Image (cartoon, rainbow, N blue to C red; front, side, top):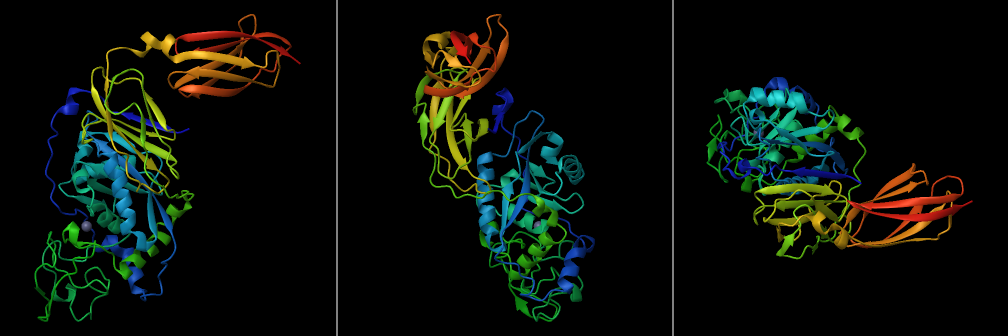
Length: 480
Ligand SMILES: [Zn+2]
């Protein structure tokens, strides 16, 4: 069982308005010829169509780092992360790349990284990059940009405000990561010499700008709305830049594609200098059918135990994990907790009393974050602690058979709980010595357990059953 719980500290700072530094819509990637050595070599030997590795699927391990401030707030919302990865994979579908979230999300609390300059951003990547995977950092302000790829630190930083649904910044930066320059490469720092400007006649298409002959000239190093202005090359030929390309600076809504040559370069880059990415075992990609339905507590439930709130939902075919999101607001912008669990239930033991919470569940599968979250529900906690009503409410009944039973075999334990709980089963001899114990995650309602009996001499033994502060002890005779 894998369970990751992130409880955001419920403090005043949680509700304080985040001072949001406005970031420009620009990309801060600063590639120079020194960073493009591999690409130039690839392009020098490239024949369109020959290098194509289309049709194959490549799983790209992607380590996600979510950066908050020193107080541990301001995190990029996981709900957007899953949506962003789904959109990313749709946009890269033609390349055959499928990005998947590598292991658990890494949370970093550091204001210097949350709003960083390039120096601190580099330090962050040096400190936290995981080897042989693509590292992406979601921050508030990546050096005043929407995002950037750092060739020297080999990581990508993205502003959370530019990683919202339908944004294409992540796609653009990952293009840089796999070797692609801007389509307007050369214009970032002013007007290039005439021979370094890509001409409309195509004569210098593989020796100027991005070096791709199927991306037309583009002299627009600023954000523009398609179709953009009419431009003129050194021969007086006029043209429009292609705003459909992700590697241009046209507005996100204009972009929809990589060119064939760009895709060939990215595949060759993966299979060349980044081929160690492919050493990881492929995730077992699965389709997910449908969405979760919330079961318990009922919508608008009141007096839910603040120290024992059990949430339950339906299993979804294909899902291997669930993202349970608990929030203070119906918009889910103020997050109380994010839980990733393989189970279809989770118990919170440290909620606030007399507080309204909203919750929803998104099913997840390896490399597939596209399933929609459930409809949300809300509940309100009460004042009463769960332990006040523990004995009468939780532990209902227990029976063990056969009795007598045999040593080193099993007995069947039937027990009934009124809330999902962890139950400890311990075998003791008559001197009180513990012989074996086992902790069992148990459901609300009826439970049936096949419990191993100890390897011991024949005699009478005590089976002690503990649920929180309630204990039952049952004498069991064990024979050979
Ligand atoms: Zn860029």
